[in-house]
Each structure stands twice: as C-alpha cells, then as structure tokens.
Image (cartoon, rainbow, N blue to C red; front, top):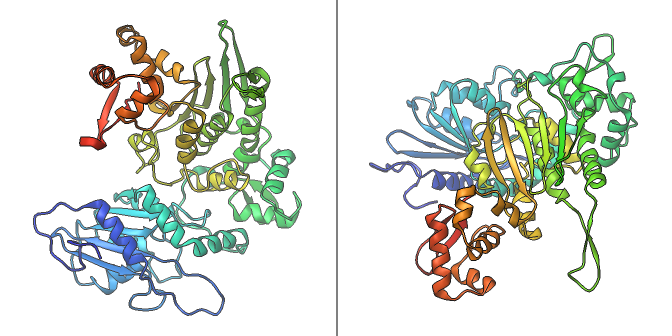
Length: 509
C-alpha cells in the first residue's frame, strides 16, 4: 500500500495526489478474489478507491467481501451505505458497468455512482467488450460527472493484468447470442438503422476484405455472417427477418455512404512543387479508404532511389505507414455529428496534413494528444474494433505508439497536433528541413545555419542532451551553449529537468 494513502487514513490539509491514487487502485486491483467457476470463465481484476472531501481514503477490490461482487458495489454499498459521499472522488481500474448491464432489480455501478453523488471519476480502461464499452463512461458524463482516464502507462498495466479476461470478453462479443438485449445507453446516432438502405447498398469487396483479414469462416451474405454483423451493431434485423445497415455499417461497408451521410469519406489534395494540384474524393466504404489512399499516393508520388549506400534502395516519397495511421485515426475518431465537415488529407512538398472534424473526445485533451500520452479511449469503439481486426489500426489506442515511435525510426520530426474549428489537425513533416521551413518568417531570418541545423536534429528526437547535440553537430561547449540559448530565447526550445540530467526538447512551431 502506498505511504500516506493507507485505507481509512485521514490526510489533513493535503490536495489529492491523483497519480498515487491511480497507482494505489492498481495495487488494490491485484488483490481481487476470483470466484470459483466451472465454466473456465475468467473474472476481471478490479480495484476501486474513494477519496472523500475530508481526505479519507477507502478501497475495495472485486470479490473482497463476497464472490463476484463488483469493486464499486463493495465500496459504495457494503462499506459506505450509511455514509455521505457527496463531492468524493472515485478511482476504478475498469469502466463502471452501464444501465441495463445487470439483471433487474440490480443497479449498475454507474447508477450507484450517480446516487452516491460522486463528484469526479477516474477510469482505468474501457469495458473490453467493443459492443458495450464507453457506455458506462457516457452515462456518467451525461449525468454531470467529470470523467478522467488513468495515465496511459497505468492503463497498459491494467490491460496486462487482465489479459485473460479481456481476450475472453472479445471472444464473447464475437459469439454473443442474437437475442442479447440491447443496451439502453447509446453512444451515437450511427448505431441506429438507416431505414432508407438495405444490404444491397453494402460493398461485397469491403465485406470480403473484412472477412478475410479478420479470418472469419462465415461466407459473406450468409445468415451466420449477417448475424455476426447484427451482434457488432453493423446491421439491424427487422421483424420480417430482413437486415438493414446501421449508420456504422453503412460508413464502414457502404458502396456510397455519402448518399445518406454527406460527411462520410475523405477529401484528398496533393500540392506539387510546380504549383499544380490534384484532388480526389474517397467516397466509398471506409474500410477500403486507407488502401486506396496509399495506392493513390504511390502512383502520384513515386519512390525515389537512395544512393547513399553501396546498394541502391527505393525509398517511398512519403512515410506511408504514418499517413495510414493518421488517416485511419481521422476516419475512426472523428465526430460524425458534425455533418458539415469531412476528413481531409493535404500533401505539400513539406508536410502531410490530416484534418478530422471535432475536438479530442472528453476527457482526452489536446495537450495529451500532442505529448503522445493520450489515454486509450475510442469515440466510435465498434469502428475502431473493425479497423483493428483488419490490421489497420492500433488495438484500443489512438495511434500514439506509431505516431511517436516511427518518426524517430525514420529520422523525422515528431508530428504536431493543433485545432482550428472544427478540425483536429495532425501535421506530419516530410523531413526535418520541412519543419525549419515552416517556422515564422521573421524568426527564420534571425537564425543562422548552425541554429537551423540544431533545430533539424533536435526535431527528430523527443529530447536532447547538450552533449549529444555537440557531438552530432561537431560544436564545442561554448558554441553549443550559445546555440541553445538563442533557440530558447526564440521560444523554439525548452529545458526539461535540472542539473547534469537537463535535456532540451523542441517547442512545436
């Protein structure tokens, strides 16, 4: 147990240490008691902590007082039934279950949190079942509770500890019974049936791609395949037995989804060095767009030959893996309620810009996106699930690993996130020189070649020591200090840490 945050201990005149409380919830989670079962079904490990206004901390884990009892239920009902919890903070390693997830008259954990008048909730990871995740979170948010997510590294710990449970939950989602009752919480209008469409409006090519890459045995169009799509929220079945696509199904697999949703698809534009431009609208099934974009860019921007080594190598004109990750994230995580805007891809000689309508989904912030520490949370979890099954997206993430690690491998600057109403904008740099050319003209005029070279090198690293900068550029100590001071004075560089361990990182222009 963490020092200073022992269960029931009163911590006078202290602000809560959110990171420590998240870490303690994980410690408590590991004490969860698995109920004896004969079906081999794994139980989740769940820890919950309540931080009361008087700084008292109490904890509970799943099964602590009785086999199968949820951690939140144990904490709120078994340990604090007669206590006032108004204004308290709750930390739970797993998304609280949503209304409709438990057999009546049992209340869901999210309903109990509302009744307890909890002020804010920190959630470790989403419910691993993609057909129901985020509904507990949304119910809390719709009820006026502020929701935060655990830090990303702690989310990884929770997922690793619950790997068996998560794997089984995903399997159950695949083979869920058709008569499983629908949840009462709706994340998006896209979950509703599109009554003006039918299965003939779906693309066989797109469905085949999904079937083959996801290794589904059922043939496209068969009852078992359609039942799978019903279970995944991509089709609805009417009383007459016919199937109708939902908004999600039409976006993912529809031949022409823009006929019903004008905001669907992606607008592509290439600006060539000679001033000419070329455009293309990607209006078909969403699941096909990443491959179509990649082929279009390969055709229009052919590979170059790298002669810097003994054996000539072809190098793509663009970092296509980065482009694919950016495009997929834009399509999957955009806000489809913004009907007047479409996703956009703009390629110039210096940058690749991907625009996605809508701010990051609460509680994720723009600052977390730019630091590549955004927690795992999907705006459209079923879309994300389908793209992950077809190996087109990071499982349960926002592309943070790819977008942070691949530029370093390719010697490119870290991408930049910004927001211009109504678009979340991701800028990918085609070279470190591109980033320098994108600086403010007046600032650029004040920099000499040494300072520009320093910026180009630092831009390819998350942070940089003074010694490494000096070694790479061949500067002596005095010159290195002068260059660093000038870049800090121009607000292009900031220091991180202190003393001998001090490093410097680029302030994105």
